[in-house]
Image (cartoon, one colour):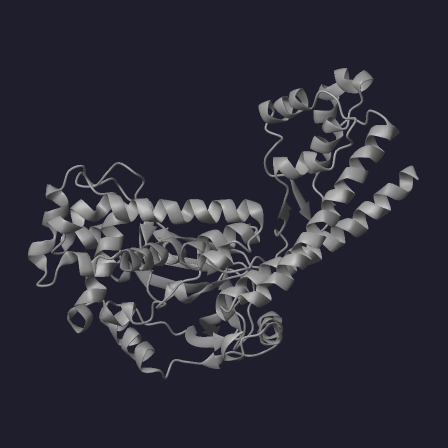
Length: 435
């Protein structure tokens, strides 16, 4: 490993990541946050509840200056601070967007504005916000290929799809970028590069809040629901909190109200939704430790790999599962195999004389002790396969010298290993009933 970035170092970093007792370090004195607060104050926002801080594990976030109570509004960001498609259309880009056919998407409008304003540097009125945005992201589209290949197979497939999607987004937008040449002294190809657009795409995808807006005639009819919210977007995710977040039409502010108490000088969290770690990594570029929604996905190929060689009518059984939407979202969780996974396995393990009962299986009925035992045995074999595969990946990652990216993958894989070990234990308990 390069620069002392071996596995021991990553384990040390992961232990720091999982520490929930370490207090944050106040960062409000830093020049970029001083400038951001001045910029926000000029736009009629001055927060007295939260301050920027750096926390072990989550990185930059917001710390409470006082204790927060249930139902308290933790942030109220005026519309003048939000970056929306309205912001873009009112800017120098508006006339070019209005002329371009077919109309650009709302996402392209936002990404183009971010790249253009970042290129403007000190001349951009949005510089104080741009300065606190991450310089790089850890969504799969930004990971090195050898790191992507260490992801679990279902997530790996989606990661490569994401990379293809963003490349297509860039390629299909080149003509529009060329139309902006009169605005720049440099060649637009150097400004609107793939790397620049990928950065902007990640900024919108990972940081935007949901804010449905009426369609604009100069934009494509795709839903216009993204708004970048300076300062508010420093709030990190936790699955253990509850918040209400929405744009208040009366106050013309984007408001977040917490339903969870928070102590003084603690990190304040919001919840992005009940997402598993695959979704969090794919959409936001991070993994949540001890995520109650985390799970391990079982693909169709793995589903049938460990079935008895004597299993009959396999193609027909698979067809039934597909027709009844029982071939996707089959998982192991903290409590063991999901009901969907066990149901699919029970159907696949039906003996020839039991096959006529497949509808009862999908309704959750028990067909026979033999069928129950066979499905649990297959589930146990699949679980142990995943445990061995995960151990193999954790050993293999020592060959890849990309410390920060591997810390992310290692955290994901280690969490999945814990889930699988818990599932194996749960399955052993269930199997004893049929011993």
